[in-house]
Image (cartoon, rainbow, N blue to C red; front, side, top):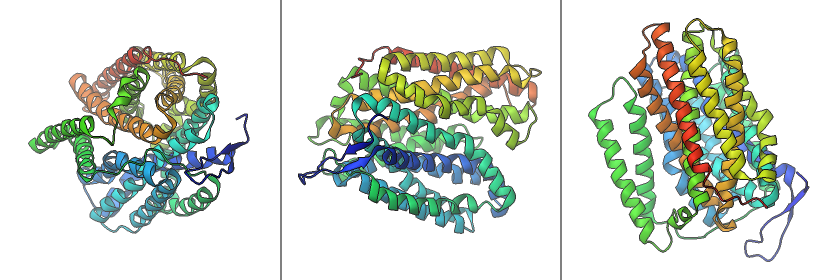
Length: 468
């Protein structure tokens, strides 16, 4: 970053304060890292949790899904509170709730307590990512935001690399409860430093409508839950009913946003081609990515016949690029604009997945995947910061918090929808019967992920560059 300090908004006090941009970047990235880490680290501890609590796979699924469902359900409500009460204050409250939930998770002695504790964690995590984005974006000059968001993405991306391996190490050397205990000291330190070193800012201080709050919570909780249930072997009519009811509630919510004077999601933002295109491209970018996240580790274990620790190392050509490329990609966004970098990134990710679907087969060497994985990772590392800056830069500064919340909703829904569709495609062309059928399904899933990524180009090409 060229500047060493940033000036905090006065928030009506008539005073300003200088803040070190390095600390702003570190502390906002830490919140994103913690929320992502907790999602990834649990995956490698799932078997140990299932064995210790003596539960079925279906019951275990709720310990994993409760976290993501809660984040999607309460995210926009938390963002609205941050805009009204203060972004830093809500960010710290989110870290506190997340840390408290981690304590409850570590102390859980049965699956019911663990699921409730994961919901508490999810409530805290729901504001950690959007508020960290809003604080960072509001504190950094426009011409440096791409670089800052690139570094932010890279640090958060470390969770994809460190999470699975660290989870496996902790479970092997200590116990699964310690994957939650490690959040406690980090959370306490983060809250203390954030209260001292992060600037406070506010956005649109509109009152929060209770009916809108309930509608958005039930809409997203129902949608994400039903999507996760549709792909399970025990899918029932209840999942379809809940999904349809959630869509109806969502339509009602949108209708209310169009008629209210102080909406939770101002629909006027979507009149901007850049804002709308950026969110839709984000949806497709992460729909493609999460489909690969779901199947790639399984393919390496089932067909490649390697253990989880080796899998963590073998996906490094893909995930490792987030740390290496994202900061440079963010700088390129500042120099060349969002439209070009986002489009190139989506192309690279799509080509990477497409090459895997073409050249990988049951007997192929792992090294066949290395270059395509790296190419896809570079694409994700480029498109991520570009789309973030496009969306946040398309609104006025007072709306950055709401814009970051909307962006993260599209990201979460993209992941949920993408995973559901990819699972459907997998079972249409393959199965888990043996390696041959698994490979057939995996190749079809990778091809579909490539198509999703390429479709994102349609929307990135509609950007109006806001480079300054």
